Length: 357
Image (tube, rainbow, N blue to C red):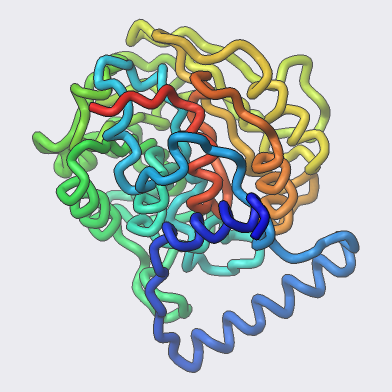
């Protein structure tokens, strides 16, 4: 057996089995129609589409190859600040069962599955107008089950999955980046409602903590309110919108934050695949994040059209990312994926310096 096949076999053995979900008749019909529409759209506008990233071989991960993806932070020095660690993340993390999945779905596993696969940064989009938090992707509702009549996915369910994971894996931390995606509530009333969920299991300072300070905890990263808005809960992770398909002078934009750190973000979400990969690669090959500098590098894009097919772009960009050699002992910051997998997550966290505690 070749080295690549052996490595792929080991990766398959490590990956947790995904629970089989029972779908009702309506769920099956919706899934089938969505799949048909996806194939038609991709056949017409993306003739080169070859269907996902199932054949991507994992890179050479060295000493990290046999480390459990569910506990990888156990092998990171606790004295490092969060900004000094290469961290895999999931864009629009709660869209597994989103309405109109062909244009709205960005992940195909739930929060528990993503955390077990190694994800440690969750992009959480909330709908709030004064009566409880539910998950959404723009105007599209995220559902608790894969059919239209299912209840909206509640924030309580997402929090429960995070807390259960951290209770079982106390060496880990989960950064929860929260955005007020939909609803007419003010930033003040949104945060007041959110504060009801905050307890001792959260880190809510606007400061860059060490890993030991936040092991076993949720870290709140705030993406609501005005840019550089002081006095709110959590890390200030607010940035200016990076829409538009015209190539920017710099892929990654930086902003000094009041918490004593800077935030650099590449979130060119309307680039076509080739331009998007150029932006991603520029960040990977550029100066690494530092002790007081967070870096967010998004692989997600919907392309320049009004409605994109995230799965198509992910199949291209995730493959290119797996083919990209990452240097051991290099800090690549937080790398955000659509349709994240254990192999993608491992490719990120394996760039960290291994330090068995």
